Length: 270
Image 1 (cartoon, rainbow, N blue to C red):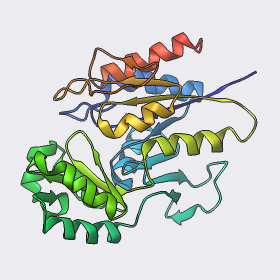
Image 2 (image 1 turned 135 degrees about the horizontal axis):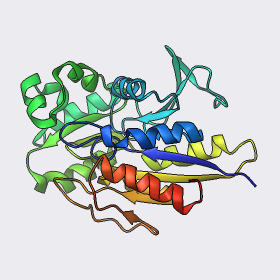
Image 3 (image 1 turned 120 degrees about the horizontal axis):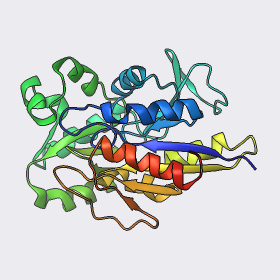
């Protein structure tokens, strides 16, 4: 019986170099995936606009999930499309997260009680120093639809902040550079289950691979058949207890490329 393989991947510090955002060393493997017709599904904290640009640069035309599992976007013409997919230009999307207006109002209330600073309140120079992104991409980074990334100046405030956030119907996720205020029902793992169910509806079993480096990737790693952890150049390996976890020795993008190739060989694909 044939099996369909889906590869879910975080972007920053997983597929993209932490400092330069280069993916040069992964290009041959991405080309191989295209030739094998294996979907590479971005599952990232980035915005729709950032992710769309990266997908176009890589020549990827598959669904992708943004802002920590808040929504899955499908290119027009993709089949099968899920019910209730909302039109959005050349895409349609299914939302799991909360609208940005709700998150923004909640964050403003939190900012009156906790030492937090949202990225919308940061100037270009500050964001350039923190992220190392090209200046022209910062606009797309700030175009949030479903989440509020922020800095927390006092880590001792994290636990009381989380408790208050949960009481408001939201939650806090930790990414590579920022914390993220997001909807309680969303998550990268939910994206995996949703797309696995959608794409196995034709009766072909689906096997999944997930690659990530940060705490906000953990529920994705738990949801896939083969989880792969990429070491972060700042934090090293995150503390995570996931069965069958493959820890790569190299950082992004080399670790990503080696991890994908190992799975393809172990599964007899190449």
